Image (tube, rainbow, N blue to C red; front, side, top):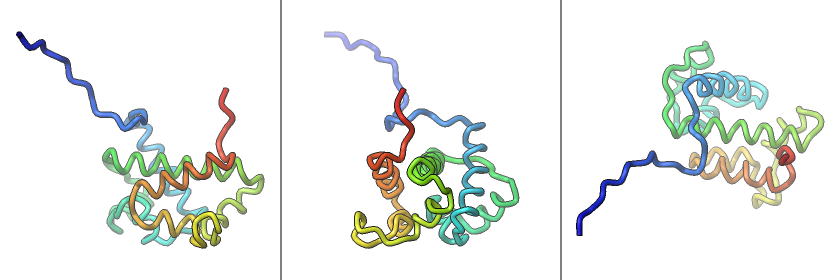
Length: 140
C-alpha cells in the first residue's frame, strides 16, 4: 500500500482568522473599551492575557505593534461582550456598570471578576452567557 500525500490545513479553533488590519482596529477599540469600562491599567493588562504595563502604555499612546492569535481572540471576545451588553441595555452606562456588579448567575462574582481570572475561556464564558441571555444581534 502506498501512502498518498495530503495537503496540510491551518489549525482552526472554529473562529475566523483576524487580519492585521482588523487586529489594529480591535486594539484601538480595546483601548476605548478600557476607558468606558473604567478599567485600571492592571485590569486591562490581565484581560489581555498578562500584557506588560509598558506595552499597554504604548497601546494607549496609539502604538499597537504585532498581536498574536491569543491576544486577537481575547480582543474579539471583549468586543463580543461589549456588543452583548449593548443589546441587553439600552443605556450604555448600565452595561458598563454591569460588568462590576455581583451577579447571582456567577455565584455572586461580577463578570469582571470572572474575566480577570486570566484564562481566555473566562472571557468566552461571559460572552457566551450574554449571547444566551439575548445579548447578541438577531441572526438573519
